[in-house]
Image (cartoon, rainbow, N blue to C red; front, top):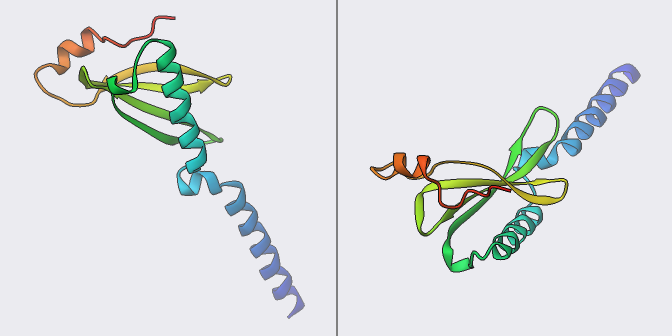
Length: 121
């Protein structure tokens, strides 16, 4: 009986450790970090003379990876709703990491070839 109890307690401790260490991944990221990233992106864009009125949508999400994960965001601009731009933290600084098709229509192909909000630096 003592050995079964030991196994049960060991299993519960191991399961608790696994759940606690992966909680951020399980719930899809912390809301507070998502809100902070959205605010940091708005500040970053404002420094590049983009107003909040120019932004159609910011979608912050937790990107799950095998070891750890990171927060990323898709930003869609009002004057270019066909594309989204990916932003992420790189050494604590908001960085643009690429773009993709957000709304597929007749303008999408042209927009992919001529992105308006691509950051060169």
